Image 1 (spheres, one colour):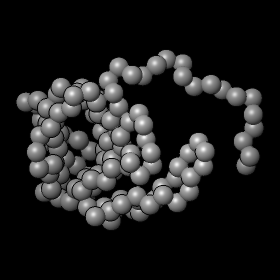
Image 2 (tube, rainbow, N blue to C red):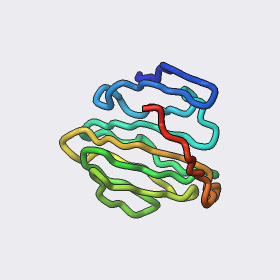
Image 3 (cartoon, helix red, strand yellow):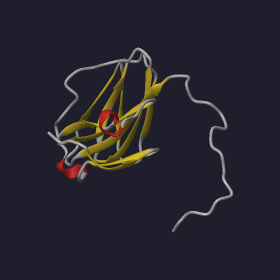
Length: 133
């Protein structure tokens, strides 16, 4: 089973290393290893023919799936559609979802979960400070 190794941390950040996605088998959650407090992120790699073994939904978290490579099918409620590199899927908490690799190469994606309705406008602050590089 793949794991995230914390390789550096400071007062305001943590850095981890998961290794290459090609060595991942299934799903790797990053939240606990990096100390996320407002979202969960997972790295996912499914071999040809591999599927999420169950359908699921959430109580509060919406999810965003960003597919990086491969081809597969994604189910939301009773609808099934094709996904591939560059496909981005948002799913609301109560929706039933699952996906599988129906292609001939690895299907990889990043999944981000956050509480639905928690995003605020204009959160970023631009600083008049030059980077150190």
